[in-house]
Image (tube, rainbow, N blue to C red):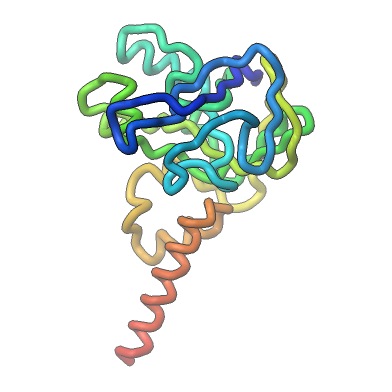
Length: 215
């Protein structure tokens, strides 16, 4: 696999949310540094739902773009989906939580899929886009930065498979909000992003307390 495009965005007006968004990513002709919070120069407006150390880099693959080009009947430029790195051969359904991607000095660890929002639907200008994107199970992936460095067009991308429980990233596009206790225990075997891990651990603790009280 190789990097086909490195994309960053500046705050631009949009008729949604706060009125501005950094989702409009543009390909960069030069190498871009990646730190623990993502690509240098990239703007995150909605920091409550985007960015941070566990969603520092968003990647989308050429095979998934090809699927959507066929579905929508139009050409989709790199960066349109708001991804930082457009990668050849990267298919969402083949990635598991905890897989690592080596790109030169940079080492990324997959933490979660992208769950679409209305800002995404607004820029796509496709009715029902959020539901449609979710149902397609081609979400792209978020990653935390394990080792920093810089990336550029044409860099090789090596997948280092997660050695633990194989939980496909697409498992977190369905019932991740209200999973059963057994499912939460299963999902916690993967290196999830911090907020989701804390949510599941808290929910399981509450369930355990309730069971003790009922005894």
